[in-house]
Image (cartoon, rainbow, N blue to C red):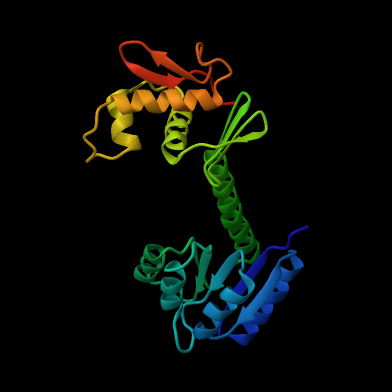
Length: 233
């Protein structure tokens, strides 16, 4: 089982100890720091799943820590502070924290809110992963690795061939004109003939279609353009 690591950044030693015990009992792997400058180094060192961040710390305060972390990562951050000023809450949210809890806090509520943030992050990650992989009958397109597999075998596609296939597979109900494909696969400043799209479709079909004369994946909509011929699995 993979442990979930939480970094606690809190200058009050008694609160730090309490949080360490509380989160450890919940099964989390817990790291604690007491100064703002230490937070960045600890996060680099242990690559945590969540940061529980106090605002009032010696040296670099929590807002500055949050700002620096957001410059380099999307690490989930919950600000935990005695400051109840609504302006501080807004500042934290603007800087990109995921939640804001004031002291004194209820232990059960804190645990539930930590788990809620972690759950949202996990669901978002799964959603992104799904969006980056399209499964068609017999054909898989992975937009992370940019690898296309036909019947389990890798298909060697050029960047433009891949771009065409990815675009069509992501919008299975849309019919694209040659002009639309020209605009999206090349760029808005390209003034070539739409015939280059016809040639691109022909080359792609030769690589993925079981029968080029009767295309299965890329259908021609006569008088309009092209669309995906099958539904994603």
